[in-house]
Length: 166
Image (tube, rainbow, N blue to C red):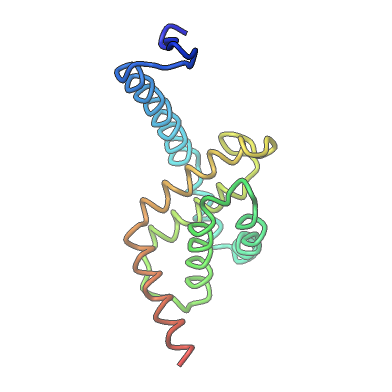
């Protein structure tokens, strides 16, 4: 490659400027991928599906029942904590235990989890690992959107656990 130079020991090296340009190109393509996934999530009807799901007890129970399967998928392991938190949030709202929630956040969390469990999203999950890349980005995006709400929920959840231990 033209970016690479041979040093006297025949190791491939690149100048600092070439390395920075390559890293910038990589970051730009990654942010383009993230943007594509966000747009697909926001425009793909996931919120409409989520609104239908939260009003249909059978559909909601089906979604909640998929927690273990998806939190244990190796391809989703890097977002396991976020997935568990989102599912806990939905379960606590649905059970009526957690009442201080935002309806908007509840719909977004439901939409994010529907995206994860759907095999027909931007990159179909029939392609292991690659098919989960968009799922990872959606969970990260949703958790970032709901950061304040999820922090508030996690604090409530911790208080509940502390109370139950006493």
